[in-house]
Length: 95
Image (cartoon, rainbow, N blue to C red; front, side):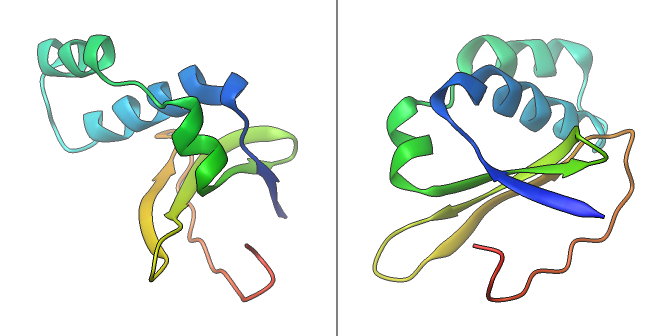
């Protein structure tokens, strides 16, 4: 069973690492991934202003999603850890 918890500013590095790791799935070079890792940052304001949830399976973080709160809410990220192949199904009670 999947569980969803609110991401907090203290999870910024974890969010960044999952984002970079998920890009590795698409065949980007290690050099490019490291370049992104050194330049990419999840800012506290982004995490607190928007809906950012960690996805847990058996108490292990396996992914995250982020919905940008604006005039129309938009899915900004949906990332899963490369060791986990899952299908995410959301209903209105998820967020």
